[in-house]
Image 1 (cartoon, rainbow, N blue to C red):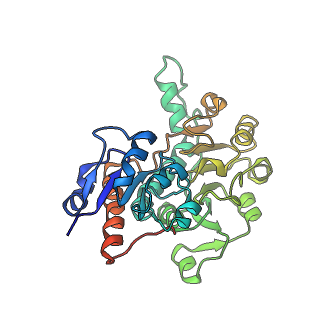
Image 2 (tube, rainbow, N blue to C red; image 1 turned 60 degrees about the horizontal axis):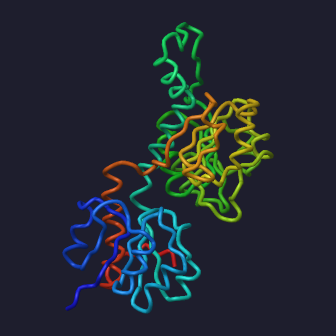
Length: 320
């Protein structure tokens, strides 16, 4: 039986691709990624495309697959980089890798929360400078997390994984979703479902874990920021455009809220310049899933989507 041909757009770790290489004919760049021109030239010969989030899979790339391309397996939990509607029109399945990103993203969210609360990034910068930091009982004071209220916007699997860590840390959980969770899930986290405005006004920490949609774009704008406690800390490991970044800059400059911790940015990799100069914000480079373990498992998951799709056996995490 002729092996299916799989084109991988980005150099992934080999440890996650062993079974795919055994069962399919796989092409992957030696390093970095294929250019759009290279992809469109190669794709007519392939049955599957394993893309990564940094690649915009537009109509040009989809059309290059002709009638042969049957599946796009995205190496990411998101799929904003793919023209989903057009792929659907062409009868192409689109898949993602939701499972491997849950725990590492939640780990980072909780770490960012603690870093912002205890001013770790600020203190780290200052302690490296001679006389840049004052030592003393009432210097460099942060805020504690134990006993505080964490508001989670988007209580899906990542939101729940954040909640699990927060509960272990002695925090109270409130959440806002478009739809309320089953009461048994609420019981698992002792979580209270509240309105969006109530979450904003009562939470000491707010974690964003919602997908980017037309409804959630700039969900956290100047109006929302004004409803938060002056002592609130905002954490975003979801998508940058869920926050109006300029409005956040102004809120941090004016101390409308205490602080923020951001792993994602509205126009990344471009970061709003003013954020670099603020001590009350922690910045990380969209590294929610940036562990070796997660990268290997994401490759394996994306590969298994392709294998399961063509074999008709097993689970395929389809977007469409």
